[in-house]
Length: 274
Image (cartoon, rainbow, N blue to C red; front, side, top):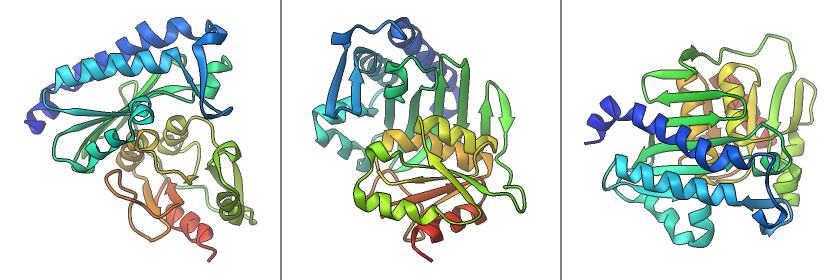
């Protein structure tokens, strides 16, 4: 069933992602009323009516396209953490972040995106990263490459001798312990900065615009789409234990993503203090 869907159903997913953004997200961009923005865990963890409505829209449309599939969405998991367990079951799972970069969205910054990935038993098979305000759609299918607006992209390798450009977990969302770990990247030859939308940072690595990422949180909806996009563009990733990050298990954190394997390993070893 899943092979048949991957062979014929992907254009319908793209249409569903675009439609959710067109109906539920873009009409609210720079138009949010105060009562349409709420806090979740704190003042920097925001959710808007656009997040909720877009996830509802995608949940309905994606499960209709692939009967028997489940959805693990950021807002659904916030309401009921047991939803996350679907990642460990046998049914195909849609992993959804309706508005990745909600802080940017609320502030009127166009650097936000919708993230959708399709996984089976922890293997990410296809992904969509749609930045509607930037008019960019990045797609990847396992074994078929990575594309932006239909043109193939490759991550390449960092320029020899240049500082590594590394985006790291934003300090607003990191513990003191995480901050100390990320501070190990403050060494000669590394130019680190806080990340924006995780999905768009993954896209920058896949395009070779950023050399590496260092993330300290495990939420599948932030990482699934980007991990496949980077892998299909030629990049690599690794947790500090030296094994790949997977969405269906507990992972040692932080983990590193690089334009190539050597870069991912270098950042990983710095994070380990080596």
